[in-house]
Length: 150
Image: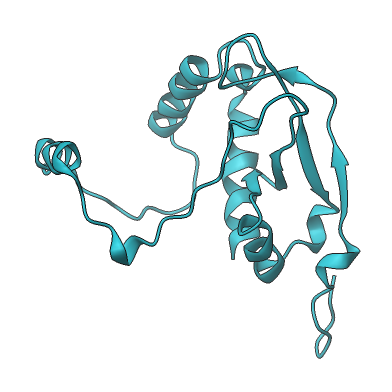
């Protein structure tokens, strides 16, 4: 926590912990581990920016990155969007989906969005624990994600 006139705490105040192994959500028959940045309440927008440039991701209020002993397949990718030139299949996909639109909605729970999120989790992360989330966990994840990135 900072007070008026104080600077945010430097990234050196963060501590990093490695999780116990768990089933990999991306590659079958492999175990994964994560490196967690704590305490999460010190992670403001500036520190979060530094973390994501160093391979961290976020899940709700937590910033983490893959930290597997036997695998280095998870490589974070940051794309220079201004330099992006779509290839043929990307242009085709864009044309197929040109009828889609984007809407900015208020931050609130939606049964429709939760159903979509649950379907994704149960398909993409089957058996890894992430596929068993509740509506309450979904709400915590969504709201916390927004507050960290601000």
